[in-house]
Length: 414
Image (cartoon, rainbow, N blue to C red):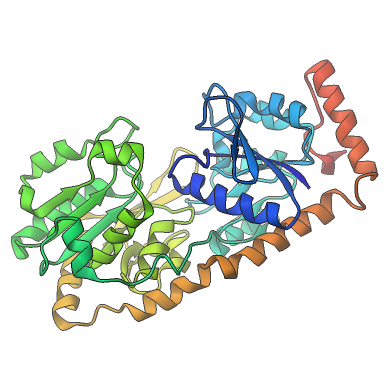
């Protein structure tokens, strides 16, 4: 198939960008032709490996350029890999070709805005089984394939060497955090982590928290420095990746060192569409603290899952997209930190289970699932190849869009 893939640019080190590169490369290897519309890329068309990256003025995740790119490239389908509510309904309605969104779902149940956008989708693809179930509960049929990692790269390593490279004490209890700081309240519960950390240091004064995130509120998140000052957290108990390093992007070895250096990874997110750091850390043998909610229900193999059904643990919050998220309270996070301290002292932090669970997301395991997904999409849409009636429908619909500015919303409605 000829595919226009819309997501973060594969030139940036975000989860969407990195996964886009891996998935597109693998799908091209089995015969698909793909062009990537990088929503975070501005510049002339750029060749990246075996595919081309295009962009343009960025306002709303590439939506404002999408119709022009469809008319220029003439794909068989458009694939978006981002929260679907990021895309403008009017543009989705006017797409002259089928839209097959790859959907991260970080609320329970399926968000109202997500469901509204999916009225224009031909074949959604879920990246977690939990997400697929939520789609099914909302009456939406989806295919399923999970994101992938390289478990030959993300492996257990020498903890002391990693700590030395990160300037961390060799014998301290170290908590790691790897995640974006892009929302208020913090979807990653970052403010709750810092608040709980201040209380935890009264019990374990030599512990260290490593935050790999943007500490500034410039992307819409919390002001980490301000909260740290407010809570009076000593510098010796906190490490934060510099804004420059985080902004320009660190190499994968740096992030792997954070996982290896940590005794546990903190990821008590209010909701996760997938949560790659959770799986990557466990592949390195590092257990995790998560919520038993959304994607984390199925990606937590070792560590502690906080009970999202217990109102003493936290509260459900209504997200602005019309679904619930779960926010653990400060006391719960404090107790989870104490639990980690006790487990480390007892030598019972489980690493083997973490590693074995993460292996199910190795690229060798998940790539065949993605190939099958796109075979099913091709069978659904093309139905017989290049001379099919559907191809004629695509051509006519593209011509209608160019002539009148309108098109039918979906081949399934024609």
